[in-house]
Length: 474
Image (cartoon, rainbow, N blue to C red; front, side, top):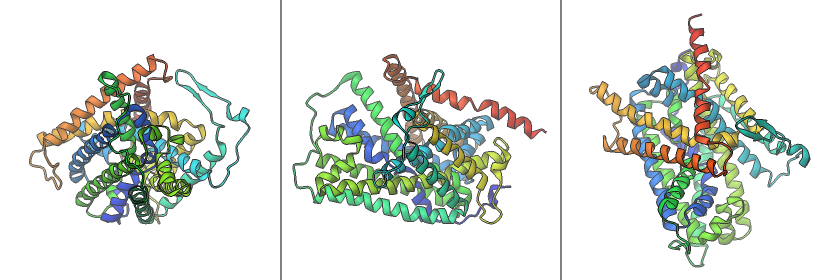
């Protein structure tokens, strides 16, 4: 079936809610702890959040031009296929299925279950069984029996939200609009509590007693940018469902720009709130990296940490829903092009949703969650994603050159400077990330070179691509 048979029912508000909901998960509540340990400087911390936000905005504006020209279901998979050929598009879609989309869903569901367990104790196996390792040659060990109770709750969440999204994109989007609105209000509540209920000395301009400089500073900034980009990630997911948006050539770019500006503003605000209440040493040493909980405990008392835990449950529920809703459309579009299992291209006769693509995604994400391998997989994700973003940015230049007179409902503001800066930064970031990974591996700080392993996982899809291409001729 063709993507046009999907239900085009989404308007600007729910589409914008999907943008915000896809990005604002758990990262913003915990990422600043590790970033502070890396950077040891309040001003540089805020500068990293602003700079990575700006690069995210540049990437969003660049993608919006492609969305306006190709407002169809599948997003970046479709853009890369049309510009560079089907094989490159497939590699992106395969990366999304094996690493990015499904891995993110599994990770978010586990975080949801982790905070859920603070309110309702979950069963677990004995220490000996939970420590049983499953060793994968040249990769490392995973522990499928560890935290089994939490994994079961996470799998139930994935199945529940998958079933809701099978019932209809409009239903899933309504849930998204409600949960995203509640999440944004709750984050603003943390910010207001920090600035108006805390009456101690502000730490916004605190300087570290042991500042870092030279290459150590460059390495620290690169590592902290990876954490920030993980928290910012998901801004382009809404493009996957362009085939279900009314007037997508205009609505989707508007939603991405509004949503991106919104979550950048939220992220900078909440980090200013963190630094206002807590000194750098306490942010860096926040228990389990829960900076937001530590801030609220100081600002409003012990009950503040409970409120933040509830907020993270809501936030991860919301982001898991948006990730399930959007990512399945990539595999649906691939099936339409016959480079994925053909059943993933089927549309439900009653609900007009890609129900089998949603089901396959849910099963794979549940498997990743059960094995615990999502943690390893998502750590490879940032490198792979930004390598593909280079192709995204270059694609705008290619289309401008090949089709100078083509209709462009949205043109990237500041062209060619904005996409050029985005491409150059993406190249630099990818090279620095690869160098850091190799350096950390050589020092024995990590068991594998994550960037290279992520690349190998993407390339592992080629035998499947060859098989599905042969099936086209049978």
